[in-house]
Length: 194
Image (cartoon, rainbow, N blue to C red; front, top):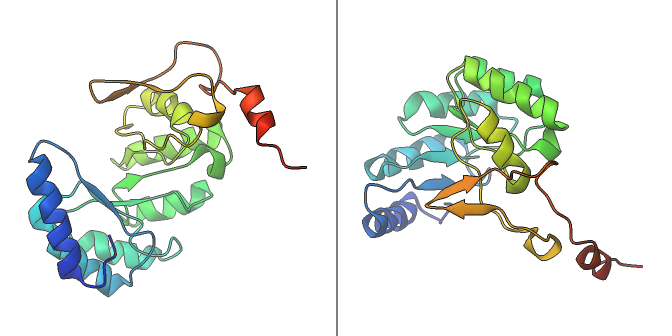
């Protein structure tokens, strides 16, 4: 989202809702584009369309703004792809500034810190919907009781030998040992820059 006016965003989201019907989740991402007042105004315009969440509506360091937004809307606020520490997630959760957390294993410092964020979110009744690296995150989301969605971004497809298996709308964790990424070494070598 982020068209010049809230009305334009509402019309677009309304058209999407009409096209997909009530049984499909719609999430919107503002990419840290708004002020707190503008995010509150736009969230109110989207409520009739039963949006699953509003992702990154404000700059990641604006905890107070997210807190105000979360208190003003029934639509969950999602944050996390631009957050790099357990303490940052803790502050959001303690203040009720987010209902969905989206930790990224490559940005938070690895699997152990990612799991700490997920368990912290569980303690606050928040869901985990990780950002990027779906090949790794599908196993992590499956390992915690509050894992809900895995962001589907097939950016590694050109440099891997296996793709994430998706069947009937569900991502399936790989059965092979490892992190879930099967690198195609030749494809990686072909992309090297001298």
